[in-house]
Image (cartoon, rainbow, N blue to C red; front, side, top):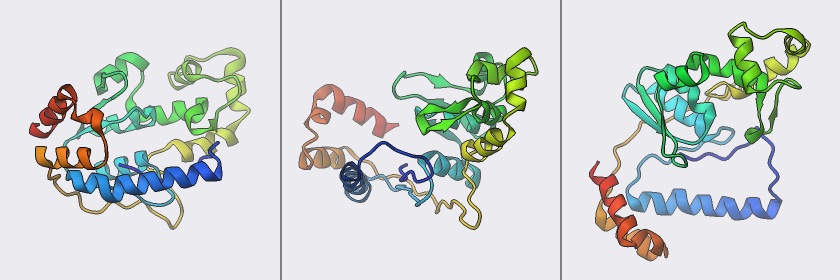
Length: 217
């Protein structure tokens, strides 16, 4: 899933934005359809985590979410989501593991992000409040100056709740996800696309074996 971020600031130059936009268009409009992926979802004003969440909430199915975005821990509150797979660490985050790791319920993750902010999305939190302090606040275990600090910045917390809650809510501009389709992947498609676009590393026997395993389920 891909969408162009518009609500959060970026350090990209105008030239870099043009280059990345062209690359994303080629990926979405040419490469992924040629591979047989049918669900290239995108909507101006929303990000991939918004679209993923909306798809989960809209269509009755069972889901494995593949993402490194910790914002998506929120969807673990949905029974249909089995786990979130992190492609960088190779680890699965289940509901039970989330509870053991953070000591809170998945639906409370929004409160934590609203307090602590999110550097990766350029969302500033309450000054001096990190993830651990935010979790302690949610658990009603935070004391002293940090607790007082949180009560001094209600406007930051309310602003962040809107920014970090999935899917993102914009008045008069709802996120929409069209009907999902079944992918049509095949080994011949993969080899043809990788060869035509110069993805030679994907054609190495070890990589190609993994792609074949992915296709076969």
